[in-house]
Image (cartoon, rainbow, N blue to C red; front, top):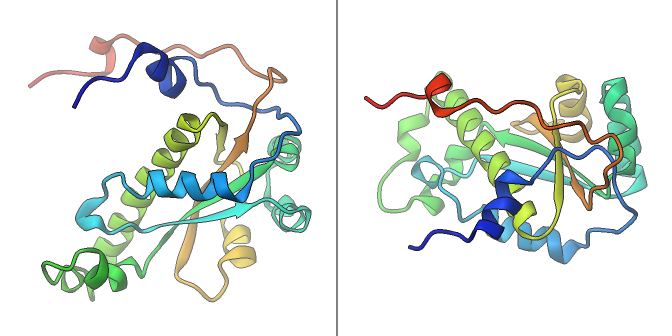
Length: 195
């Protein structure tokens, strides 16, 4: 495997920003399907794929989401072409016979609620990060956020399921509106070590 070009690294990491303003350019369903086809290929433990994604694109969907947003997240979410609710399914292990067929991985989780919660949250969070990288690789900008009423979103979008919301991410074509200066990123030695 060869390293990505500097241009690709700039797109994914160095020049990528958390956007708060959006153009009117839509994000079509084909692009959302391409995004899924990329993010699903990234690794999760035992290929468990617990991430569940609701792509909120309609005015009606945004109105359902709006009451559960913190005030500072309302405008940027209502104007974004897409808001993704990134969740994780606590019944993910029921799909393991299909997703990890070479061993009985489902049995690792049955009756172990703590392991289910930990695995679903960890790997669903990874899939949320993969979603952002996939979106950036397709020429989209991202605005991830935590400022929402999780219980409210769960009741509104996941009632009667075993799916729990984790975080939200606006995606589309970003503008410089309300784009904050990049916050500091420390050198290796501050937060890393080699053992």
